[in-house]
Length: 247
Image (tube, rainbow, N blue to C red; front, top):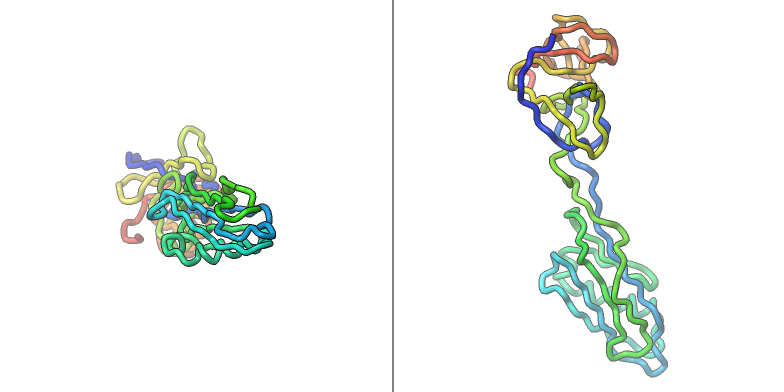
């Protein structure tokens, strides 16, 4: 028997979550943004001078930042890229936000924080007062950045040792929620029963305990979750009165 209480909330599923699973707050992996510029061309036999590098980004103080890198006669693209990397590494406005890297003719900026994807981030190179370099005004967003909390507050399956915020709602035949999609959660602490998933056979009236994969069982695993109000076979949903002293 379900004892009704109307305190649902909606979050973002960080993994596939079956209806009735105990869930906890969590976060996604996220990704560090990586921007890559590739130097092209070779400095001429009498082409020494300063090549121009322009770094643009929404979070970079003073953006756009223009750097003039001194190059020598006959410098290859790889040699020029190494000089650019060294010069960018001297700028706190860059290194406070990015790791300057790359090898060969590549110059990369890798974000130090997972703050999402800056579509304005760019590393442009031009031959400047030197000769022989091929202009490359647009760099490549090699890896799009993403926040671990992108899209909203995320929840995942609660382990045996975790204290849940609630259980995924069994609603209109919705038996599971997909990764990165919305998930309805019946919150604990507001009265009524919670739909759970049985690990093993459980009878109405039995105490149930937190176990792995967001489930509950009648044999002590983790701490007490509550008391079953319905019978359930292994893997079935059942209704449980949450025990407020178990949080």
